[in-house]
Image 1 (tube, rainbow, N blue to C red):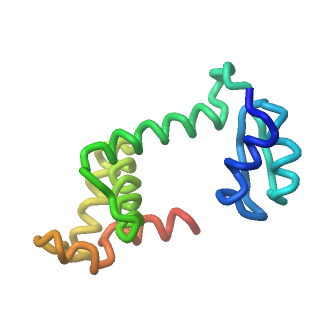
Image 2 (cartoon, rainbow, N blue to C red):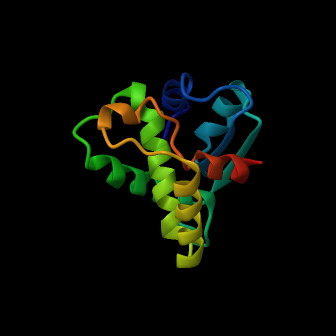
Length: 136
């Protein structure tokens, strides 16, 4: 069981005002999140396997952890590039083969890919157009 004090210490510097938060049903979060002025707080039963947000968050966390495990270390300077790479790879796991082929063909036609690793971090990835249209 999480105490209110421990929840406050853990979340204080990680959640900003206006954030949307999903937690388990621990009551310690209620007052802490209200004090942090979150925009929305949804709580889910951690034993409920009907597709609640917590299960999806745990799944994404596990997938990201597996993806990052192959690297010996990750510089915070390049963290955004790693996260973009992770999201790009995930699109092909969720898409059917026709959609994946179309996405790759569009990206190859519209972008350039450097062959040297040191150049990779200074070039905007060719697949970023996909995320711009998805967010809109």
